[in-house]
Image (spheres, rainbow, N blue to C red):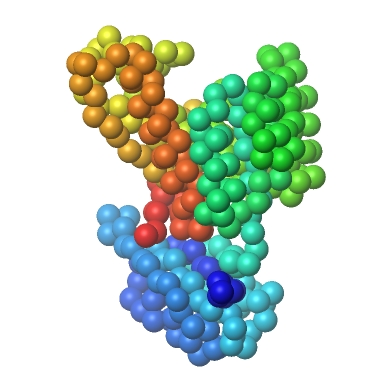
Length: 289
Protein backbone atom coordinates (compact mmCIF):
# COMPACT_ATOMS: atom_id res chain seq x y z
CA UNK A 1 0.00 0.00 0.00
CA UNK A 2 1.39 3.41 -1.01
CA UNK A 3 2.11 5.66 1.97
CA UNK A 4 0.57 9.11 2.04
CA UNK A 5 3.06 11.83 1.27
CA UNK A 6 3.61 14.19 4.17
CA UNK A 7 2.50 17.79 3.97
CA UNK A 8 5.52 20.08 3.97
CA UNK A 9 6.36 23.77 3.84
CA UNK A 10 8.94 24.96 1.30
CA UNK A 11 10.98 28.12 1.75
CA UNK A 12 12.89 29.57 -1.21
CA UNK A 13 14.97 32.55 -0.13
CA UNK A 14 17.90 34.80 -0.88
CA UNK A 15 19.56 37.62 1.02
CA UNK A 16 22.95 39.31 1.40
CA UNK A 17 25.43 36.71 2.57
CA UNK A 18 26.09 36.92 6.32
CA UNK A 19 27.23 34.61 9.11
CA UNK A 20 24.69 32.45 10.89
CA UNK A 21 21.75 32.70 8.49
CA UNK A 22 21.39 28.91 8.11
CA UNK A 23 21.45 28.43 11.88
CA UNK A 24 18.84 31.15 12.42
CA UNK A 25 16.34 29.70 9.95
CA UNK A 26 16.82 26.05 10.93
CA UNK A 27 16.63 26.87 14.63
CA UNK A 28 13.31 28.66 14.06
CA UNK A 29 11.92 25.59 12.30
CA UNK A 30 13.22 23.09 14.86
CA UNK A 31 12.17 25.17 17.87
CA UNK A 32 8.60 25.31 16.58
CA UNK A 33 8.21 21.59 15.96
CA UNK A 34 9.17 21.39 12.30
CA UNK A 35 11.21 18.47 11.02
CA UNK A 36 13.55 19.48 8.19
CA UNK A 37 13.45 16.99 5.32
CA UNK A 38 15.50 18.92 2.73
CA UNK A 39 18.06 21.72 2.80
CA UNK A 40 20.24 23.03 -0.01
CA UNK A 41 22.12 26.30 -0.10
CA UNK A 42 24.51 28.22 -2.31
CA UNK A 43 26.63 31.34 -1.84
CA UNK A 44 27.35 33.61 -4.79
CA UNK A 45 30.66 34.93 -3.48
CA UNK A 46 31.15 37.34 -6.37
CA UNK A 47 27.91 39.21 -5.65
CA UNK A 48 27.70 38.36 -1.95
CA UNK A 49 24.27 36.69 -2.16
CA UNK A 50 23.12 33.69 -0.13
CA UNK A 51 20.47 31.33 -1.56
CA UNK A 52 18.66 28.54 0.23
CA UNK A 53 15.82 26.07 -0.22
CA UNK A 54 14.58 24.40 2.95
CA UNK A 55 11.59 22.07 3.30
CA UNK A 56 10.10 20.79 6.54
CA UNK A 57 7.34 18.49 7.75
CA UNK A 58 4.31 20.35 9.13
CA UNK A 59 2.83 17.49 11.18
CA UNK A 60 4.05 18.74 14.58
CA UNK A 61 4.56 22.43 13.75
CA UNK A 62 3.06 24.60 16.49
CA UNK A 63 2.68 27.70 14.29
CA UNK A 64 -0.43 27.75 12.07
CA UNK A 65 0.61 27.55 8.41
CA UNK A 66 -1.30 30.74 7.58
CA UNK A 67 0.91 32.59 10.07
CA UNK A 68 4.28 31.25 8.89
CA UNK A 69 4.95 33.90 6.25
CA UNK A 70 4.08 36.65 8.72
CA UNK A 71 6.52 35.21 11.25
CA UNK A 72 9.35 35.09 8.71
CA UNK A 73 8.69 38.66 7.65
CA UNK A 74 8.54 40.03 11.19
CA UNK A 75 11.47 38.05 12.61
CA UNK A 76 13.86 37.92 9.67
CA UNK A 77 12.61 39.91 6.69
CA UNK A 78 14.02 43.34 7.53
CA UNK A 79 16.80 42.15 9.83
CA UNK A 80 18.44 39.98 7.15
CA UNK A 81 17.07 41.79 4.06
CA UNK A 82 15.33 38.54 3.24
CA UNK A 83 13.51 37.96 -0.03
CA UNK A 84 11.54 34.73 0.11
CA UNK A 85 8.63 32.68 -1.13
CA UNK A 86 6.83 30.24 1.14
CA UNK A 87 4.66 27.48 -0.32
CA UNK A 88 3.13 24.18 0.72
CA UNK A 89 3.50 20.80 -0.95
CA UNK A 90 -0.18 19.91 -0.65
CA UNK A 91 -1.11 22.92 -2.80
CA UNK A 92 -1.03 21.48 -6.33
CA UNK A 93 -0.01 24.03 -8.89
CA UNK A 94 -2.20 24.60 -11.93
CA UNK A 95 -0.38 24.67 -15.27
CA UNK A 96 -1.67 25.96 -18.62
CA UNK A 97 0.03 24.71 -21.78
CA UNK A 98 0.31 27.00 -24.81
CA UNK A 99 0.87 25.30 -28.17
CA UNK A 100 0.74 26.04 -31.90
CA UNK A 101 1.10 23.21 -34.43
CA UNK A 102 4.06 21.10 -33.24
CA UNK A 103 3.08 18.29 -30.89
CA UNK A 104 6.33 16.72 -29.63
CA UNK A 105 6.66 18.79 -26.45
CA UNK A 106 2.94 18.61 -25.73
CA UNK A 107 2.83 14.81 -25.96
CA UNK A 108 5.85 14.46 -23.68
CA UNK A 109 4.33 16.73 -21.03
CA UNK A 110 0.96 15.02 -21.15
CA UNK A 111 2.51 11.55 -20.98
CA UNK A 112 4.34 12.50 -17.79
CA UNK A 113 1.20 14.12 -16.41
CA UNK A 114 -0.99 11.08 -17.06
CA UNK A 115 1.71 8.78 -15.65
CA UNK A 116 1.53 10.70 -12.36
CA UNK A 117 5.16 11.86 -12.48
CA UNK A 118 4.25 15.43 -11.52
CA UNK A 119 2.13 16.82 -8.69
CA UNK A 120 0.41 19.30 -10.99
CA UNK A 121 -2.99 19.92 -12.57
CA UNK A 122 -3.44 20.84 -16.25
CA UNK A 123 -6.92 22.36 -16.53
CA UNK A 124 -6.55 23.83 -20.04
CA UNK A 125 -4.49 23.86 -23.24
CA UNK A 126 -4.38 27.13 -25.20
CA UNK A 127 -3.47 27.50 -28.86
CA UNK A 128 -3.44 29.98 -31.71
CA UNK A 129 -4.36 27.15 -34.12
CA UNK A 130 -6.93 24.31 -33.96
CA UNK A 131 -4.48 21.62 -35.15
CA UNK A 132 -3.72 20.02 -31.78
CA UNK A 133 -7.25 19.88 -30.45
CA UNK A 134 -7.28 16.14 -31.17
CA UNK A 135 -4.38 15.72 -28.73
CA UNK A 136 -6.25 17.56 -25.98
CA UNK A 137 -9.31 15.40 -26.61
CA UNK A 138 -7.20 12.25 -26.26
CA UNK A 139 -6.23 13.37 -22.77
CA UNK A 140 -9.66 14.83 -21.94
CA UNK A 141 -8.33 18.36 -21.36
CA UNK A 142 -10.24 21.49 -22.49
CA UNK A 143 -8.70 23.11 -25.58
CA UNK A 144 -9.16 26.83 -26.26
CA UNK A 145 -8.24 28.49 -29.57
CA UNK A 146 -7.34 32.18 -29.83
CA UNK A 147 -6.49 32.95 -33.49
CA UNK A 148 -4.01 35.76 -32.85
CA UNK A 149 -2.82 38.10 -35.58
CA UNK A 150 -1.29 41.57 -35.68
CA UNK A 151 -4.64 43.30 -35.68
CA UNK A 152 -6.31 41.45 -32.81
CA UNK A 153 -3.34 40.58 -30.55
CA UNK A 154 -4.35 42.86 -27.66
CA UNK A 155 -7.95 41.61 -27.71
CA UNK A 156 -6.96 37.94 -27.92
CA UNK A 157 -4.43 38.21 -25.11
CA UNK A 158 -6.98 39.98 -22.92
CA UNK A 159 -9.32 37.04 -23.47
CA UNK A 160 -6.48 34.61 -22.72
CA UNK A 161 -5.77 36.37 -19.44
CA UNK A 162 -9.44 36.15 -18.50
CA UNK A 163 -9.33 32.43 -19.25
CA UNK A 164 -6.18 31.91 -17.17
CA UNK A 165 -7.75 33.77 -14.26
CA UNK A 166 -10.93 31.73 -14.55
CA UNK A 167 -8.93 28.49 -14.41
CA UNK A 168 -6.80 29.87 -11.53
CA UNK A 169 -3.58 29.17 -13.44
CA UNK A 170 -0.34 29.37 -11.45
CA UNK A 171 2.14 29.09 -14.33
CA UNK A 172 2.30 28.69 -18.11
CA UNK A 173 4.38 26.37 -20.29
CA UNK A 174 5.04 27.39 -23.89
CA UNK A 175 5.31 23.99 -25.58
CA UNK A 176 6.57 25.31 -28.93
CA UNK A 177 4.05 28.15 -28.94
CA UNK A 178 4.94 30.25 -31.95
CA UNK A 179 3.77 33.63 -30.71
CA UNK A 180 5.62 36.40 -28.91
CA UNK A 181 3.86 37.26 -25.67
CA UNK A 182 3.10 40.88 -24.87
CA UNK A 183 4.77 42.67 -21.98
CA UNK A 184 1.40 42.75 -20.21
CA UNK A 185 1.10 38.96 -20.29
CA UNK A 186 4.67 38.54 -19.02
CA UNK A 187 4.14 41.05 -16.20
CA UNK A 188 1.12 39.07 -14.99
CA UNK A 189 3.23 35.90 -14.63
CA UNK A 190 6.76 36.98 -13.67
CA UNK A 191 9.12 33.99 -13.69
CA UNK A 192 6.07 31.79 -14.18
CA UNK A 193 6.14 31.34 -17.96
CA UNK A 194 8.51 28.62 -19.18
CA UNK A 195 9.69 28.51 -22.80
CA UNK A 196 11.76 26.12 -24.90
CA UNK A 197 13.82 26.76 -28.01
CA UNK A 198 16.87 25.49 -29.83
CA UNK A 199 20.26 26.71 -28.65
CA UNK A 200 21.46 28.09 -31.99
CA UNK A 201 20.62 31.64 -30.95
CA UNK A 202 21.95 34.15 -31.84
CA UNK A 203 23.97 32.49 -34.62
CA UNK A 204 21.10 30.92 -36.56
CA UNK A 205 17.95 33.01 -36.26
CA UNK A 206 14.84 32.72 -38.39
CA UNK A 207 12.33 30.03 -39.26
CA UNK A 208 14.77 27.28 -40.30
CA UNK A 209 17.64 27.15 -37.80
CA UNK A 210 18.29 23.44 -38.39
CA UNK A 211 18.75 24.07 -42.10
CA UNK A 212 21.19 26.88 -41.35
CA UNK A 213 23.06 24.71 -38.84
CA UNK A 214 23.30 21.92 -41.41
CA UNK A 215 24.77 24.28 -44.00
CA UNK A 216 27.32 25.48 -41.43
CA UNK A 217 28.30 21.93 -40.48
CA UNK A 218 27.67 22.22 -36.76
CA UNK A 219 28.92 19.43 -34.48
CA UNK A 220 26.58 20.11 -31.58
CA UNK A 221 22.93 21.10 -31.34
CA UNK A 222 21.18 22.04 -28.14
CA UNK A 223 18.00 23.15 -26.44
CA UNK A 224 17.38 25.78 -23.77
CA UNK A 225 14.43 26.17 -21.42
CA UNK A 226 14.05 29.48 -19.62
CA UNK A 227 11.62 31.84 -17.95
CA UNK A 228 10.08 34.34 -20.32
CA UNK A 229 10.94 38.01 -19.88
CA UNK A 230 10.37 41.11 -21.99
CA UNK A 231 13.77 40.48 -23.61
CA UNK A 232 13.05 37.89 -26.31
CA UNK A 233 14.64 34.48 -25.58
CA UNK A 234 16.89 36.07 -22.96
CA UNK A 235 15.19 35.17 -19.68
CA UNK A 236 16.76 33.25 -16.78
CA UNK A 237 17.83 29.80 -17.96
CA UNK A 238 16.43 26.78 -16.09
CA UNK A 239 17.73 23.82 -18.12
CA UNK A 240 19.95 23.12 -21.14
CA UNK A 241 21.36 20.11 -22.94
CA UNK A 242 23.19 19.16 -26.13
CA UNK A 243 23.54 16.26 -28.55
CA UNK A 244 26.41 15.61 -30.94
CA UNK A 245 26.04 15.84 -34.72
CA UNK A 246 28.25 14.42 -37.47
CA UNK A 247 28.60 14.97 -41.20
CA UNK A 248 26.41 11.90 -41.72
CA UNK A 249 23.36 13.56 -40.19
CA UNK A 250 20.83 14.93 -42.67
CA UNK A 251 18.61 17.96 -42.07
CA UNK A 252 15.83 15.55 -41.08
CA UNK A 253 18.19 13.91 -38.58
CA UNK A 254 19.00 17.31 -37.05
CA UNK A 255 15.32 18.18 -36.75
CA UNK A 256 14.49 14.81 -35.15
CA UNK A 257 17.38 14.98 -32.67
CA UNK A 258 16.58 18.61 -31.93
CA UNK A 259 12.94 17.91 -31.19
CA UNK A 260 13.80 14.95 -28.97
CA UNK A 261 16.12 17.23 -27.04
CA UNK A 262 13.58 20.06 -26.82
CA UNK A 263 10.92 17.91 -25.19
CA UNK A 264 13.35 16.42 -22.67
CA UNK A 265 14.85 19.78 -21.69
CA UNK A 266 11.43 21.43 -21.39
CA UNK A 267 10.09 18.62 -19.20
CA UNK A 268 13.15 18.82 -16.93
CA UNK A 269 12.58 22.55 -16.50
CA UNK A 270 8.87 22.10 -15.82
CA UNK A 271 9.62 19.40 -13.24
CA UNK A 272 12.05 21.66 -11.38
CA UNK A 273 9.46 24.44 -11.33
CA UNK A 274 6.75 22.10 -10.06
CA UNK A 275 9.12 20.91 -7.32
CA UNK A 276 9.73 24.55 -6.39
CA UNK A 277 13.47 24.13 -6.86
CA UNK A 278 14.13 27.14 -9.09
CA UNK A 279 15.03 30.51 -7.61
CA UNK A 280 15.31 33.38 -10.09
CA UNK A 281 17.45 36.38 -9.18
CA UNK A 282 18.17 39.19 -11.62
CA UNK A 283 18.55 37.33 -14.93
CA UNK A 284 19.95 34.07 -13.57
CA UNK A 285 18.56 31.07 -11.75
CA UNK A 286 19.72 28.92 -8.88
CA UNK A 287 18.37 25.42 -9.56
CA UNK A 288 18.53 23.30 -6.44
CA UNK A 289 19.27 19.57 -6.62
